[in-house]
Structure formats: structure tokens, C-alpha cells
Length: 308
Image 1: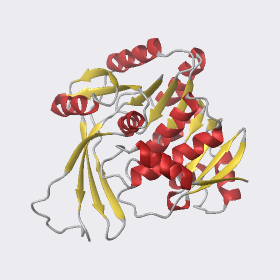
Image 2: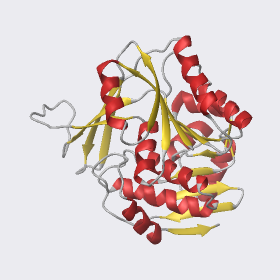
Image 3: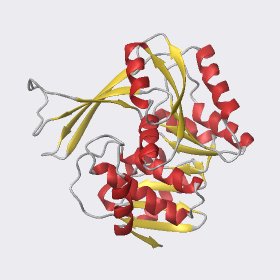
């Protein structure tokens, strides 16, 4: 079973505005409104790929009710109710300038009792061989090292822990051990304290200097593809050059694809190719993390994976 964490889910309001100018007034816009958060996106992508998952999260207020209804068709839900409203995120997509702007709320605060209730629920549910995905931002009130703690629970239960976070959560995650970690180049640069680079040897050096203990590391590199470092070797994936509608959810779809492939006992190289195809499929989708499996399989044949 794949178990995805989204401690601080949100409502995504996405606006597509060509030639967006800060300070200008835009009227009569109709947003695309969906349930969001990295773990939510992972669960949605998994469903589209033919997998099943359980999502663990905190929900609050009317926003929480909307999120619950929106994600129920995609996964099973294990949640703890909190007093304050779940957060919202505004995405402004400017395809003319090829830029995406995100305005992200902090979200509600959980009590220690609420946090322990969710962690106890997760701990009791985890079975040997499960994959537990720690995605995105934590939530105010949770311990700083929440993902490292969950990784230790996974080791005790014989489960694999996947990590896809950023910022302070990623720094605190250094205390854990992971079966898989998916940084992008900016996250890797910030964590390692080194400048952004397109040089493969330098990127490998950043991974080694990151302080994250992970058996597999997939570095997403946008249009340049991706890099996988694992016990099986170092691989580079070249992706097809196609028009991109949005990059929001691409990383989450990539994580979902890799997790499903590993659960199906694919090799790391096979999982890498499938994961990259899932990310590419999301980039041409009009909905975040709602991808077409037929397109994923088509893109999979167009992706070149080379061993370095």
C-alpha cells in the first residue's frame, strides 16, 4: 500500500493571466478550484496511474470539507479535524511569460494531541512493504523533525519512506533515512550551499553534500530532464521537447510514478523512466496531477535514459 502524507492540504485557486503585471487590476476571472498540497497531488496522480493510496492529513472548516469531498474519488482518507480553516493557495499562471506565481497561506495550527492522534493512526496502519510518502510543507504545531520521525517509524515497520519537501522541513529531515528523495535543482542548491549547476558531476556533489541520507535521489531538472542516483548507478533522463501548460504538480506526479513502479517491483531504471513520463504528462494536463495514463505510456517510449 502507498500511504501519502499531506499535513497541511489546501484549496488551489489557479488563474491563467497572459502578460501578468503586478499592481494591475484583473476583472471577471474564473479560477480553476481544486484540492491541493503535494500529498494530495501525489494521491490524485496515483489514482490516474492505476494505483491506490491512503492520504493522511489535517482538515478544518469549510475549506476542509471542500478538500475532503474533492479528494474522496481519488483515495482513501484518514484525517484529523482541527479548529481553524484549512489554507488556500493562489496560483497565477502566465503562459506568455512562462512564469508561475504562488501565494501560499500558513494554514491552521494543530495541538500536540491532534498531531499525536494522526501519527498514531499512521503508525498503526503501516505494514511491512508499504511506501510512505512525506510530501510538502508541514503544519504549525507539528514537531520540526516530523519527517525524520516518520522515517524512523517506517524503518521499524519495514516500510519504505519517500521524501519530497523543501525549506525548513527539508533541513530538519536530515535526521532521517529515506528510500527515495526528489529534490529539484533549487532545493538541492539551497540545502548544499552550492551554486546552481547544470554539470552532472557538480550536481552529484551537491547530493553528497546535502546531508540527506537516501538510497535513491531523483533530481528534477525541468526541461533538461532528470538525474537518478541509486545503488544501481547514475542515470540521466532526456525528456521530449513539448509545449508546457503548467509545471504545478509535475514533481508530485513524478513521485507518484516512482512509488507505484517500486511497489510493482520495477528496477530503479524502469521506475525512473515511468516517473519522468508521469511528470511530463502532468505538464500538458489542464488539471493539476490529473494525468492520462495512456499519455504517460506514450511519453515513456519517448524518454531516453542513459547510464553514466
